[in-house]
Image 1 (cartoon, rainbow, N blue to C red):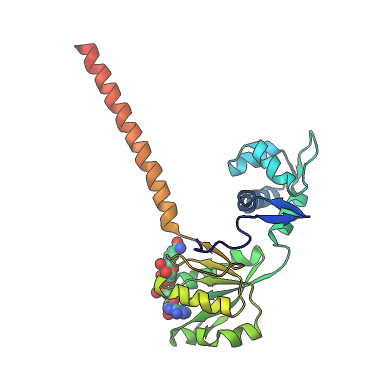
Image 2: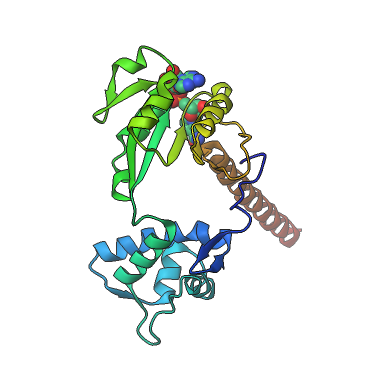
Length: 242
Ligand SMILES: NC(=O)c1ccc[n+]([C@@H]2O[C@H](COP(=O)([O-])OP(=O)(O)OC[C@H]3O[C@@H](n4cnc5c(N)ncnc54)[C@H](O)[C@@H]3O)[C@@H](O)[C@H]2O)c1
């Protein structure tokens, strides 16, 4: 995460003047994904229990989260799936188009640039940038890769709201500094390094290895518990036969 906290991270965001806690903000995309799946199945109304079950939270927490959006559902009926999707999308800012620039068009940058799922969620890949001249000879997903040296010129031609960093860790801070210097205030960082940014700039870090480590921790605990159970059963068996 950021070394300096983004100004809006602790405070959460405002919904119609009402503060939404950051933990709720983090769950909104999950609610949206579950609602989209319900809509795709032709379901137009869902109960708080159904929606809560789909995202693995308890229904009291879900109702509290949605109350921040002014959405209370209809007693005995539930939530209108399409309207709730719209409310959440509006809150997250997905009812508008967010142009994204990806910096570092190597393995990961290519995959991100080719990912069609961004477009359907309101994020449009608007620019691709790389420092290596040989990269700047190619196009990915129909978008030409431009030299990172030309960042200011690219941004003058193409407005960008969010910068995505997919460079090696050693280059990421320099890239972030240049993005911030060019006026970008939202950065998604895939490089395994903590970026330092000024107040008012939001950084989110994506690290698959952290997620894998969390799974490994739970896997290890499960294996440990199994081992203890096995030892207890063996000990009980020995006691009986003694
Ligand atoms: N967050 C995750 O879960 C995750 C998963 C995979 C990779 N990564 C990270 O993503 C980053 C990219 O990985 P990759 O496998 O695509 O690497 P890669 O070497 O294939 O690509 C990196 C690209 O960045 C470019 N680059 C280097 N310095 C630059 C600079 N100063 N400005 C602009 N472009 C520059 C290079 O020319 C290259 O094209 C690495 O930091 C890697 O650790 C993160």
